[in-house]
Image (cartoon, rainbow, N blue to C red; front, side):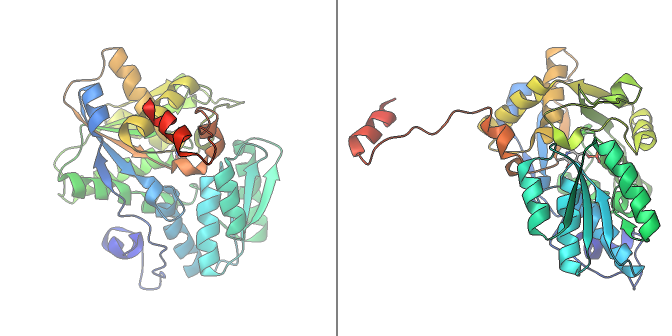
Length: 346
Ligand SMILES: *Cc1c(COP(=O)(O)O)cnc(C)c1O
């Protein structure tokens, strides 16, 4: 069952909203044993890379596309750091509507670009950063009368609330901390809204701290001012002027949470640790929360024994180039068993 059908009673859907799905949502929440021990906490990872297009964007996209179809939209438009375009292109393909995606030229991970093209979207590379591409997408959507499916589309954040509901259901309670990467700041806002909605209807009895992590080179919510030239290896959060900044600030303030930033080195080290000690391969942006938890631990600011959920927002396969830049190459041998045994000696 997809997000719309499973949570129709909690979402702004009508009988006319098409129950489209590609099988999004219901992703695993797994206890990360080795890293929990390392950090002295109970660490749970929500595997959003298991969504059909490989990132959490599918939860909101299914809602945005369903509502656009309900309203008779002729085409979809979005600007994207990569995963929004992959997701929009997938749902557009299945729905049989054209999709136009604007990407910052040269700044999108290879897997995401391959996806958007394979799903058949019209892909436009803009010589400018994401923030500029979004302005252009909004103005083009308006003049053509097409549906914009960026997170300025309120249905995106509605669908993304489902992640919070699933966590409450899986844990049987709320975590102490919710650790999440922050780019355009939609997801942290959606999770907070989802947790609050569950508290209002009595499904949980308290709320947790919202801990938002940005990349040091694109950290407007940490520095308190827009970042005109965002730069980070974590391309999914390479955003200088987050559209949902006001909602994210509210989430952090109301939950006594915090924004923090981590360097690219810390992000890549966390990505390697998560893969090699946790068996979980997530894209760089998804590893900002783990990098942040390690940073807080080193500063003596990570309370022992707390339960933390971290959202692994996108699949590691999305960005093979960054992964390959951090690891060695395979050991090459001839067609010869002795050479193989030699490798295994040691
Ligand atoms: C979109 C995205 C983010 C950032 O989410 P926002 O809602 O823009 O803050 C983080 N990680 C991945 C993998 C993403 O695709």
